[in-house]
Structure formats: structure tokens, C-alpha cells
Amino acid sequence: MKNKSKRSEYAANLRRKAEAFARKQVDRASQDIASLSPEEIGKILHELRVHQIELEMQNEELRTAQAEIEKMRARYFDLYDMAPVGYITVSEKGLILEANLTAASLLGVNRSELPKRPLTRFILKEDQDIYYLHRKELFESGEPQLCELRLAGPDGAAFWARLQATFAKGPDGEPLCRVTISDISEYKQAEEELRKSEEKFRLLVENQTDMVVKVDIEDRFLFVSPSYCEMFGKKEEELLGEKFMPLVHEEDRDGTEKAMKALYSPPHTAYMEQRALTEKGWLWFAWVDTAVLDSKGNVKEI
Image (cartoon, rainbow, N blue to C red; front, side):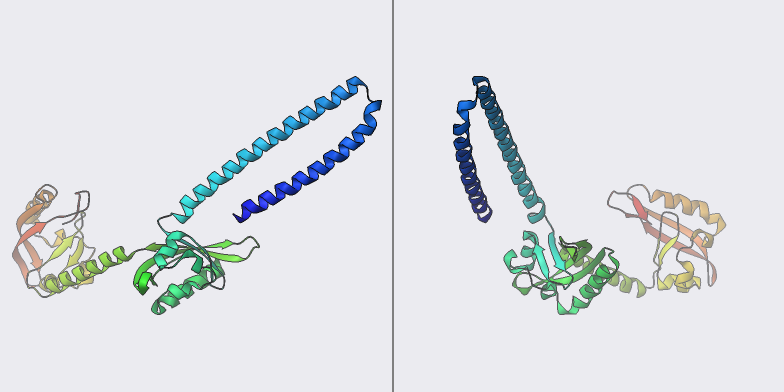
């Protein structure tokens, strides 16, 4: 509304100046018109008509340009304010200069409340050092920074966020930090559940007497249980990354390889018996193998 009022005032002033100029021209023309021939008057009228057409064409171009500006503003609103992630511009002193609607929603405040407030106001105290370190590195090196920390959202509830910061310069050349904020709470929750699951699996394996191993598609050890290491008289670091087949008796290798190939077809399970060289010499073992599949159904571990 403010911009519209300014444009109206400008147009009114321009109109008054044009009318004053026109009156002056009419007065001057009235004094000289008696000395002009009909041909000269015709030329002047023609020039006036051409000039009027030019003004109308310029006005049409201005209206078209104004319509394009409005389209760009609408597009800016869609791309910036309605983006699925939060956008915040921060000064070198750490004050918020600008923010989109998504950022305000994530932080649980009205967008009008964000400018001139420090971003640290919304970062949990325990994680503020992470932010300070990355911001310092950004302004010193100019290199993009990425960190994960906890922010205080609506009602003060904390949530995990990933902050991606890039260096920029403002209209006057002042250094700025442009920050993208993504809510990664679900990812962090899944990560924690996976960690707990892996910990449970580790405790289960470490406290059982049956031997457990995992190998990749190249038959190299990915995991060996403590009971397996004890049986073969080797440390975990000695086995990981090595192939298991050298431990198998030569006469049993063909049968072992055949059973391993069966793991690549449904139901992706196999039973095998083989002799292996252990700490106590050659011993017979019976194995039950089940392949681990990726999201596309391809075997990634056996």
C-alpha cells in the first residue's frame, strides 16, 4: 500500500508539470501561429500525433513491465516463503536479517519477530558452541558449512535440525551468512533406533557360544563374533577384510561355493557342512546362512 501511494503521488506531480508545460507551449504557439503556413501547421499536428502514439506505446511497455514484476514477486513468494525448508539470512554479528515463513514456523514465532534477533536465541545452549565454530569458519574461509544441532521449536520443544550455511555479501558489500534449516528429527530418531538395534545385536552375539559371521559379495569378512575369533585363534582385526575360503578344507570348497551361490536365489538361505582349520586343527562345522538383501532385493551380505 505504501508503494502504491508513492506511485500515485508521483503520477499526480508529473501530471501537474505536464499541464504547466502545455499551457506555456500553447501561449507561445498562439503568438507564433499567425506567422505559420498551413503546411507548417500540418507538420506540427503530425508530429504531435506521432509523439502521442509514442507515449501510448511507452505506457503499454510500462504496464507490461509492471505485470512481469508482479509475476516475479508471486514466483519469489512461492519459491522463498513457501519452500519446504527454512531460509534465514544472518549478519556477521549473528543477528537475523531476513527469514521465510517456513523458518518462522519451525522456530514457532511470527516472521516479524525474527529480524534483529540473534539466531543463538533458538539454539539449545548445549549445542551453541557447534554453531559458533561453524559460523566462525564460514566468515574466515568463505567455505560452505554444515552442522547438525538442536533448535527450540514451538512451545520450546527441541528438535534436531541440519544447518547448511553459505557465505554471501549484502548490497553494501557487508558479509552475510545464508542459512538453510531442515528438520531432521525423524532421521535422528531412526538413527537412534538403529544404534540401539545394533547394540542389542552386538550384545546378543558377543554372549552366545554359536559362531556368527557376515561376509560381503566378494566373500570377505564384514563381521566375526568373539566365539569365532576364539575358535580360529585370530583377532577380529586379523579377519576383517580377509576372505574366509582359505580357512576351508580344499576338498570342501566346491560344496561351499555351490551352497554360497544358492544364497543369491529365493529363499536366499543355504545349509552347508565343511571342514575348517581352527586353533585345534581341522574340525567339522555345520552352517546355516541367510542372505541380507538391499531395498531393491539384491544380495549385499551373506
